[in-house]
Length: 361
Image (cartoon, rainbow, N blue to C red):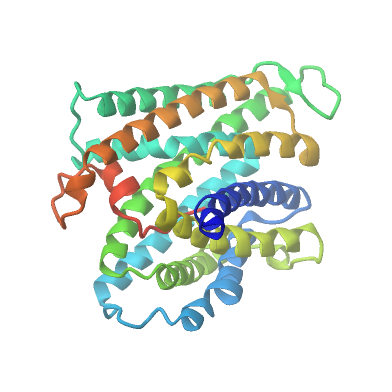
């Protein structure tokens, strides 16, 4: 009984906390590496390559996932390739946004994902909104609160409440920094808008080909094939592709192993074992970890507006997740029956029906 309890309760908790910390670690290392001159185009291409070569390539053969699986057809391969296109685009936007802002802002804005998923579901008529339903009300309110929190984080910095460096006097550079902050935050928001689209396509793939490791491997292989020529075109300085054995090499290897590879696998395992809602509730933890790490390791300042906006974002995040879980609970009996109806709420599908989902870092 003790061993089962550890596997069902203790191990998932430790794994989820560890993965959230490792994902923040990727952002911290990326910022530190770019300060040393690392090109973020090279960072993205190398991360995909390392993930494929050192983590995902041997796993399908070790675990023999090909047994009893349907044949990969052109339609599935095309959709997996489309995942690669969306994933690379999201990373290009996300890391450029992170380059302009901070890991704390990136972690805070990541809580927009459930709200964006809900909004996309309404736009594409994948979800019905019952205004008298408490779950729909929670998701509508949570989405609005999340967007409000994001606007506060982006447009209002406020005073510095924590910093390891001495404050500087106002200078013309501050207006440029504020512009970069807003631009970077907007790029991060675009990344988190692409993530729900990635989820939708990936969920459809998993229905037809339920082998997480192989899908993750093919996705990262597609990402490598897409990112390499694009990043080579965008980064014309060939010397930027030379990696020195310092923090830049550590950042690339760490990202390829932990973020692009291991994070996806651990999240998938957690979804199978505990459900997507359990995995999602750890997301706001990354805000605290990122805030402390950014101040300690990067010397970034923590602003009052960032704290207020992050708290509001977290409230909105949990409101959407609560409404989502409530809907999932009400439709649990219905979900036991196979259905291809497009009228099933997307967020219910995202958090309850499809326990074979691969998450994106």
